[in-house]
Image 1 (cartoon, rainbow, N blue to C red):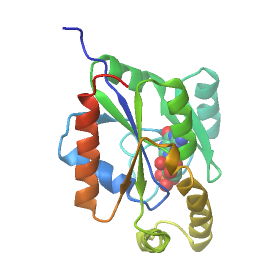
Image 2: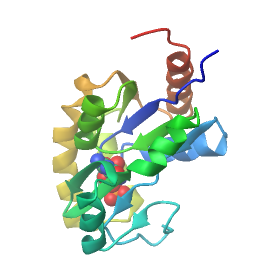
Image 3: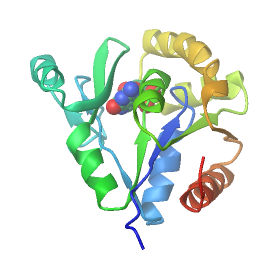
Image 4: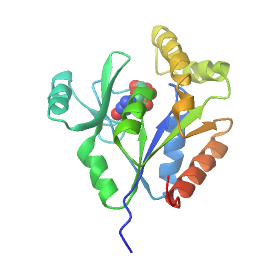
Amino acid sequence: MKKRKGKIFVLSSPSGGGKTSVCECLKKENFGVRFSVSATTRKPRANEKNGRDYIFLSEGRFKKLRSHGKFLEWTFNFDDLYGTPKDFVKKILSSGKDVILAIDVKGAMQIKKIERPSVLIFLLPPSFGHLKKRLKGRRTEDKETITKRLRIAKRELSYSNRYDYTVVNNSLREAVDTVKAIIIAERNRVRR
Ligand code: 5GP
């Protein structure tokens, strides 16, 4: 039988929508998917580790790698650059493993155009009020940043109908199980 090529699963949600928590659960459950670690020019938050949460780069280094075509997709978000390392993702795919990219809507639209097959999953907050509460409760951003992120979240939510699946994040357990079910179904898909 022909060796299976891995699939890209894109997971997006507005800031505070829960995609980091969903990814953390999937990682713990050792579900057989790999996770892309993005590069960013953003400063690390208190609990973040270089190489685990992000590859933290200077703007100059990021732009140099970008000019050498080292990103599968990249975006400018909240005054910083973010990008998916191309070689890392390609290596996972060619080893037959699936990979999850937790990226924003602009990145997702780029992946949808260039990478086939890819599966786009949008994690929806139960309501806009929930999102506000989660972002404030996180205590990792100041008031001005939260206001900015909420404004962007409104725009991002309007992209959800361009995704293959939307998953309402009412409870973390349910959201994780639904994402797992989507991955299992997509692994067994015959054709698109
Ligand atoms: P944060 O700064 O909160 O970690 O991430 C800000 C936003 O950038 C989130 O929506 C996150 O998913 C997105 N993001 C993180 N890495 C990438 C990436 O490599 N590409 C794109 N397009 N977005 C990313």
